[in-house]
Image (cartoon, rainbow, N blue to C red; front, side):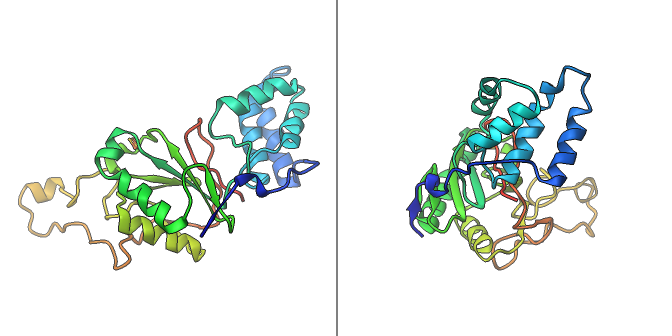
Length: 240
Ligand code: FES
């Protein structure tokens, strides 16, 4: 795949919430006292971004500002402060690759290289087919299962080059992908699933199942159609 500037997508000229998001927006606003509707700016921007395919065109920001009776500049300040909000189009899958120290020590360089080699793009670029955008991020709080990538709303952990390539292949085929540990860890348990019973000599205690032949674990799958999540200038967003 070849790289393309993420700005290939034309800037839309209008934006309104669809019926579902309009109902959600009103529900968010109703949570706050009269005159404090601006407190709902974050969830409303999130709704607008998901509806817009993972980014916030200017018209969507203006719409949210009008919806909340806020000056456009105040809403733009929020958008530019939080890295979860994108002002440029992103691919269907936003790959947020953590390269902070714990992930780096555990092999994030190999994960980054696998993404570059497989997708033919670098950070802040989108594949020509619009499927993938690569982004380098700081710690996403999953260091215990480092290295990891956040794919839209989902954490994919315990990666290496082979598992990363398998992940990208699965996403390219539109398949559901496993989330969480890719080596069968339960949560952040030590590799090998050491339990109280196994430490006590319970011979019936079994180690974790090895990853399948694809190198990817098989449980806790997330729909490949899931949209990216919004977290403070650090997490993926999903065009829904
Ligand atoms: S350092 Fe990568 S998740 Fe914390």
